[in-house]
Image (cartoon, rainbow over all chains, first blue to last red; front, side):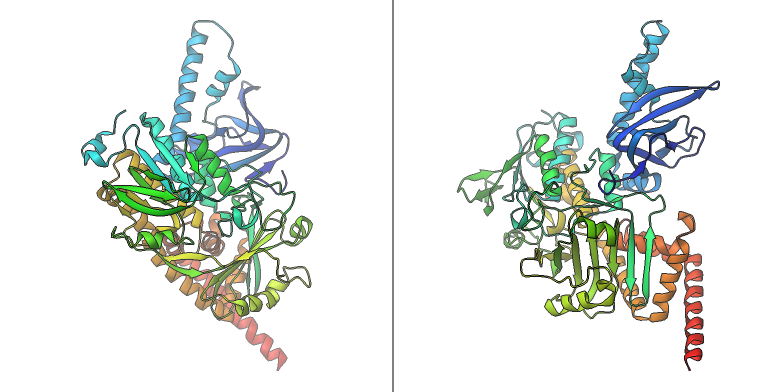
Length: 139
Length: 458
């Protein structure tokens, strides 16, 4: 992982984004894995584990809310950032650039809806897929 | 199956429909990007297209058989755009991630790092490695993009196009195999190192091929260890006062360092002068020189855009259309390919459709290049003035300890040399009063220290 590949190399356990921080970029996992954690009443809940080509923090490109989850490396992970400013400049020139992000957000909303439906009917525990969906892009 | 509403309102015969046939001549980045984007959009629209890429190069073979003659730098902005498109360059393609650059002038050198200490520039080989390599474990960048295009349903015709004619108002291609194939849309993505754009310019399409200049590219086989030790992950750029030399760069990769020279009439004498300069000598192992068998080439580069890069059923993309001045050729290929694909998918394939949607993308690059010429002219003047050059270097060096938003000179230099931002944006940043204030202050300090040194010497 040393000279090859793009992005920044994070060591095992190193925090990439922290809950409550303000953000101005989106992250794309190039190599390795990261976990999405959210603190609830002093407990930390692992919402998802993301791998190569997964995206997180994309909502920071569209709104200026605080990160609401912490993401940290599980083992070594290489992460590429996409800046809000350069992304929005390109989207202004070519709106279709946002299509994949919208497609991913749409999928996550659909999966989160399904999860809410299952929870309210008191059925199964969340699956890894739906936990990834609910982890979404707001961190 | 169906065409979009906007397209339906236009000339019905000049719209892509189910079963339409598209030919892409040239399987470099422009051709592959176009194929990827058009096939993606067609899939979203439920449109069933047949797309054939005509490319004789074999991206699995090293040397000239697969090389598209280029420095092989994927800019920061392109890396980010591709990532947003879902195209993540794998570590087998990225031979080295670049996280900084060292700028060399006669007055000294300075290292400039990305604010986030992140590798955002990719150093790649366009082909399957330089001539003579053995046990090569890296993948060709062009080959990788071509695989993505083929994975989306494009078909590869691995032969050179010999002739382009018109049959019932449609382009017909004849290859070396003698077979004639007629298409609904012809996309020309041959670059400027092919005779085809000039041949097409004679077909009364209104197209005129771009103005070019000769460059020089050489693959220095220094070996991985020497590259790690001497270059690390830094690209070295040279703004030296050598006549006819506009710009030079040494780009570290896995086992080779790619040397790129841009300027006017680059010849053997200029290359030797550059290599003999102390700034370059300090980067290379002692005694290193270009040998007869060193992989090198002198490709042409687009420096003036082609005229009317579209007609009914024809569009010219990438270098044979419009490209950014001196920088980010692959980024220009991406932008023009995307704009042409969007036009063909959502509007139509008439000259009017391309003028309406593809034309503005070309104009934006052309206008930005005009500002780029001004930026390079100013940079060229400043490198000749020792005090100016020292002031610039000192300002950039001092900024390395500051947060990213206060690195006025460093970001300007970074964006000029990496091609990460439009020249217009770079130029506007140089108009900031703090940029001027600091630069003038550093130049005056340089003049004062120079005068004191002269007094001491006297």
